[in-house]
Image (cartoon, rainbow, N blue to C red; front, side, top):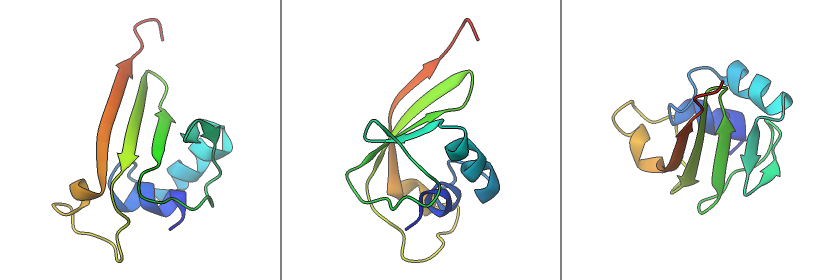
Length: 88
C-alpha cells in the first residue's frame, strides 16, 4: 500500500494530500530513510513523522485490505515514540 494512503486510512493524517505534502517536504522517514508519498509500506517498518512541534515514530503492525472504520484503524499501527519540541 502507498505511504500516503496508509497514513490517511490509519488516521495518522486526516488527508492524503497533507501526507503527500509532508513527504515532498522530506518530513517522513521509513526506517530512517526519506520516504516519498508513493513508497510502499510493509508490516514491521517504522515511520517517523516530523509534524513541526511534534515528532512521532510509529511501527506498522499490519496493512489494511480495505479502508478501515475509525474504530478498526488503531490496530494497524503502534506509537513507539513521541517527542514534543519545546523550542519550536
